[in-house]
Length: 312
Image 1 (cartoon, rainbow, N blue to C red):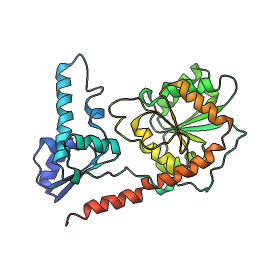
Image 2: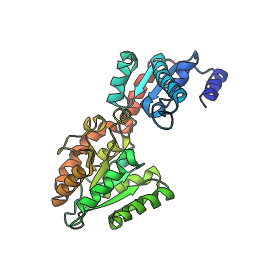
Image 3: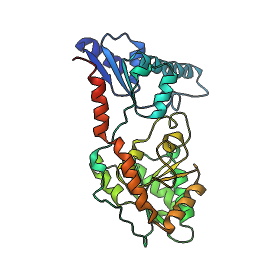
Image 4: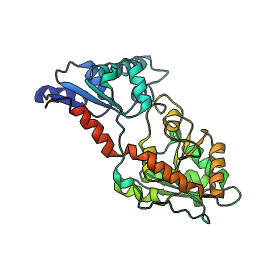
């Protein structure tokens, strides 16, 4: 694929090439390109090249190749005229790897204005179980087992919370519901298959709190989750675990909650919130105010400032 992109660039001879993924750092690092190059640095290279299926203890050749591509991605970034990391941790990492400070500018992925809520004050029904929401891909490294175990613990005496998961195909839905049934929590879980992005805000607006848990690994410690910004813009207080790409944006008890990456810690905070959900109203407002900076309109302005340096 990268070779085909390179051939297309050579044929069309553009003045500027705008790469919209970190993987194109490999292309920029490996092949000579005459046009100016910009890159949107949205994924830490370790997520592409130093994890399964690339890295294998039993495959030395593959490990050498993955390490080479990892370094090549950074080389390509350094050769780009403009580098746009999507989060503070990625920005610091790029600068530490030799990217020029004058050529590196933070630009978030951006959140659509449709995520802004229709309410000024978040409606909270304290007589109902806590309505939790998870949107997007869910698997083991995104806390799937921890979340389900926490739901089981929280509801061990009575129904304290209900979880809605939005995302995944029919096979994922069957698998997750089967896992929930095996834990005896099938009644506390709803799984909605992948929806158009335009339909996601409605789920966020009616939920009480949003879940966002990430395993502490090299790439999740660098890549900020766009879902977290969507929660904030939507006025949905997030419950996150203690990793830099969460704690850089969430202040415990102020605009969300921070837990340890384990089911006991998560279940304890769920139970705590469920006792009096009225605390979520003020959190929602603070989250919305702070989340305004992540709206796409502000990211578009930042990108226009970068583009304005070039006479096209």
